[in-house]
Picture 1: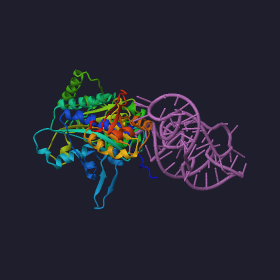
Picture 2: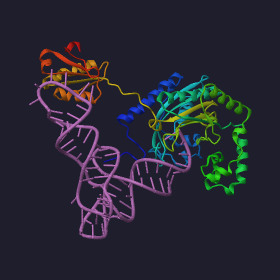
Picture 3: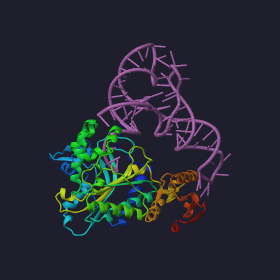
Picture 4: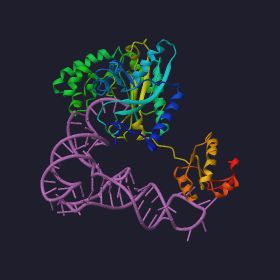
Length: 403
RNA sequence: GUGGAUGUAGUUCAGCUGGUAGAGCACCUGUUUGUGGCACAGGUUGUCGCGGGUUCGAGCCCCGUCAUCCACCCCA
């Protein structure tokens, strides 16, 4: 027996129904905000992710499904969605359009990690990317939209936000931080020391309690933002307050992906174990340029479908569709044209095997049909069909043509 | 990559200090004639993850291996 690869899963019945429900709900709501579908390849040049997600990230550093294809290209399976969408945006020269453009996408992502609760090697994200809008109102709008999607799905969450600054305030802050960290580097853990060089910002959310104590007094970016970033962040908080959305400012909230700037946010759930982030995103005003496009501000997010599947409250299943069966083998041929015409509008299940009435009703009940329509011996002789509503229990015998 | 736990019927699990497997659910059949969900009765299903070893004998002990789960790490 061949099983799925480690960290990869088949989805059926209950699970696939949850999956589809989440995706369709997210699509429906994001369309209301003006998002349109974009489909991009799963396989991309490795360079795309090196340049966007960043060399210092774990994703690029050690988690990519990377290989050389038969044409000798260095390729990899996308570990996240934003890079591909931005690449597509630039490839199609949409960066030359003056208007804002909004895309939603969903699909599989691949990261070679050790699987655990809420962490698969092949997992699915639904995400949105909004291009060309620099206003903090767009940051707020996109956060509201995510909240709306979670509300619609009955998923509880906590919102965390942070500002990562911009090209004006981040570099001086970083210098400051490195100086501070270098002073205490002897006392910090191995990981922190490595990060001082590769990505000093990441030192801030080191989980080591010893390090955390030492990092208490590190300069906080949030206190060193430039005027514009500071006022944007204040504005974002005002907007959230006015909308009655509760949030927490988490100054250690650092996106692991290098391309984010300014607003960063994360939606977290306490009910799904250690992998608690159910959606994350933020602004990435420089990414289009990094990928050779014309400077275009952008905001986006991605949500983890598998994690949401643990939390979603599915609507009550209701009976639906028609079950067709007969009690005599000769009558089965008459079922097929009936099924065909009914299928123009409704879900129909046809049982090809002649069975006793009781067996048919049991089967109809089991698949959750609303109506059982059976042709028995009498009905077959008279050209009628016996129809029973499985909910109301009403039954009637009518001519086949009237069914 | 590191650590811990677990792998027994389709599924959830039980199986005491070693004597060649059980329960609930599911499934099938029936409870007489053409009426479902309930109840009752009966029935099917297992290379006990895989490979070695110890033993007269291993689901139970030992070694290895693979897989799953959880946590670290990182993130959706």
